[in-house]
Image 1 (cartoon, one colour):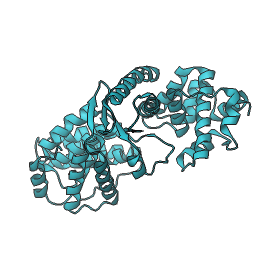
Image 2 (cartoon, helix red, strand yellow; image 1 turned 90 degrees about the vertical axis):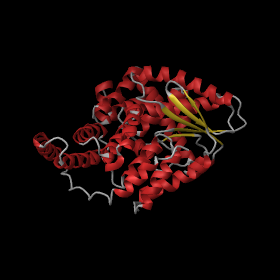
Image 3 (cartoon, rainbow, N blue to C red; image 1 turned 180 degrees about the vertical axis):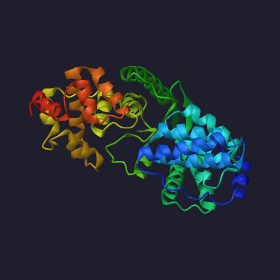
Image 4 (cartoon, rainbow, N blue to C red; image 1 turned 135 degrees about the horizontal axis):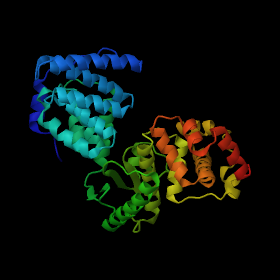
Length: 400
């Protein structure tokens, strides 16, 4: 266990109640920029290390938190970095800045600022516990996450999502006692003790090889070490209600169920390749890729293929009539038959796009999404066709 430093508890105990909620931020981006510009002007005229500088740092950090909650991680990181520049001793600002880097999957920067946050937390209100818990959980420091969230509750925090995260982390921690760690160039692998060292090392080697191929395909690598968790059996998957026909998932961490008696990584490797593709698609698209593109590319990198003459049989009777309908199917809860059909259609669509314009164009679609383009415009830009035209062309190609 790597607990929070004792001085962190004392400092937060003395810090008093959480800061009052900020004034509502305008919805209009133009109006928001006006508010930020006013803060910048006030900051330029404020004396160094003054109370005014500290107040402005808090105001700017609260705006950064709004952007972070909205998923605008880049803008959030920029504003939180400015807030830190105004008040380097503010532990809460540092904690939220750390969380922004975690959300950006820049774990090297996150660890750097987390260390500073722990050193300067004397200025942090108790709500910093909740933020630190989020950070520790993302870094797979479950012991620390449970301690931090627990302290948030002890100081009066009753935020329902935080309480749910705490309960889940406690359950998860109970399931992962004794895990060992393997650190590689691009991965940090946590494995249950029942999984053999040979399987863990072979899985790691397979992941590193797959990473070289996939990062070359997408033209980008992950910004930090990707956390991978190998579970012996399905206890964790049952805990989070994953269907029994699913053996891997990606929620920021790659999680794979391994049967303890397995001695070779080949079945495991396919699942790892699938989940690694999800990690790269999310990063390259700035988490804007639709579900069908995610699942189609993940299956393609897993090694699955459907010859176009076999598409009709693979889809069965469930055939969404458009890309938009297919995408909606991934947002809902799928039974096994519906999932098989939707996943087969997603894979076949990706195969059609690759046959139509080449693998590079498909990778570039994800990159276009990162620029803020909707999927319809990204497809048009990289293939020359609208989603409707692509769907009609795919149906003719597959003989549907």
